[in-house]
Image 1 (cartoon, rainbow, N blue to C red):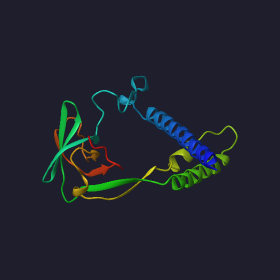
Image 2 (cartoon, one colour; image 1 turned 45 degrees about the vertical axis):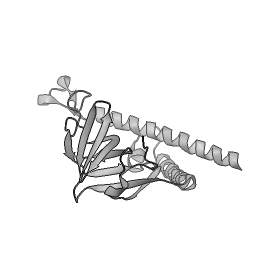
Image 3 (spheres, rainbow, N blue to C red; image 1 turned 90 degrees about the vertical axis):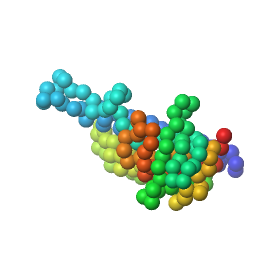
Image 4 (cartoon, rainbow, N blue to C red; image 1 turned 45 degrees about the horizontal axis):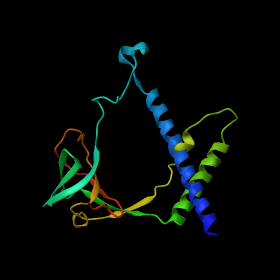
Length: 184
């Protein structure tokens, strides 16, 4: 019985990875199709976003160095620390991992719905609509948290409403605390 459950979980994980790869590929091709046609000349078409300086960053993860009132000092890497400011609008979430049975049930429903949508396609027809309209299940749920749930040494993700690629200090719109936050 245990090996059957293990096989089902491995199958669900494999299918989830395949669906994620398919969704990523669809997103990539959709992104490539949205080209910036400068002055209507298609020969000069350039991607809207590049891997260069135009990429905006609105979230980052790091280790909490300290909490000073309503400011969290976050160590992003060995040489980079940022200050995330918290106010009454900042949402703090605690992530909890779903049970394997719940995740399996959601994954089964996801694939059933995707297969039904794919079956409606005509022979030779290609569509990413089933992928786009049918998001794969998440492994975690989120519940409201508070500033007191954030501990020095734990790893968190901070989301901002602005581009924070170069910002050393910014307002946190959301803070996500993963399950069993890693304390170093």
